[in-house]
Length: 234
Ligand SMILES: *Cc1c(COP(=O)(O)O)cnc(C)c1O
Image 1 (cartoon, rainbow, N blue to C red):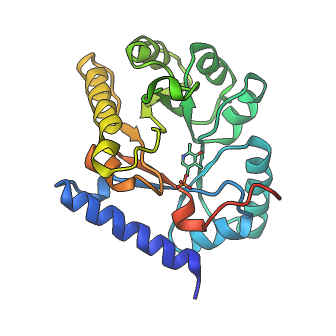
Image 2 (cartoon, protein in one colour):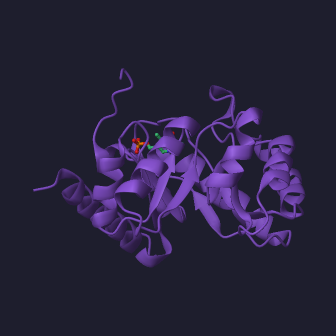
């Protein structure tokens, strides 16, 4: 019995249940498997169970893993999402090796990613990280600055602005958990009302998946519930 296979099945069931409760079509919710700290074997095993999209936070770890996965299974066509904080000196490799970047929160980073996205690859899919819980987190653009940044990113030639991403503070009770996700839903609607062709809300992790789906998440980023607890000590 494979734990990853059972876990993936359980996560799919949780997504379907949350979607039905919210009167949503489960097919509109994508599952991003967050494989950080887990090795290529775990990715290959998840892929063998139908998982296609993988999220990584640390560039060097991700590049090593992609190479190893490709060596093990050159036939697999996976998509890779960079979901961690972005340092300026890493943008070239991120732009060359990933399909999506979720945590863009400043114009300078976006400009570098656009300038450095290789010709011949499709535009890089971008989500803007929103600092939705206020001062608790330093990363993310402030909600009142999202529209201005979104308009700039949407005009960059090698990027495709897809939507918004957030990592809200854990709230404790399920009702309070929904508050930041409601604000995210409203922010995305605001961008649409301004004419931006955005379709993505990247929100919801192992602990708050149902609340995020209830408020319109289109990508949930799930690590622990698929791969188990992370050991950062190694
Ligand atoms: C690690 C991580 C996740 C996955 O979190 P889990 O609680 O393990 O599901 C999702 N999103 C981001 C940005 C992360 O860094």
